[in-house]
Length: 236
Image (tube, rainbow, N blue to C red):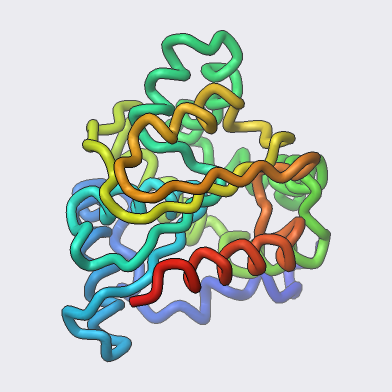
């Protein structure tokens, strides 16, 4: 793709200081991200009122943390492609395939990870997205944000701030919908099905046959229908 393409230009559109220095991973601590998320809720005019929370992958990790620490703030939780941390940790110990599925977590800690991910016109990301059923136009949209070194380094800083150890959280006391595609290349069945063991509130587990890790991109209409059903069942 030529250097003048839109996703190559996006870094110039980000105001200076909008992203903390990725070299200082203390600025990417999960506590700060939780505070940022709650500040966004307040900035949208919701103040201290309850809200519905939806998370996917890394955003799902954040959503689990918020649900565990601030259950009174949430009317419901919807999770996509990210098991409860304790279910995930158990699968890493007991499911022989899960460590291989999760190998990219350690790879992202490498100092050269950003360059590798963006090499050859982001070949690794494009190949993985295609294999997981993500439409090309959705991949282009993602790369319009992440497809430059500054943005990618900042994104990887969240992984580096947490390292390879996820702090334990307790059972979730918020009505939860967990959506998992059985073709997900990063989350195996043991981790997905095991999530129910760590939810003490009403829980719904939906398996999407043949769907990969990026269900919102691959089958948005199905995801939206499930989400709307869940929100209607648990009004604020």
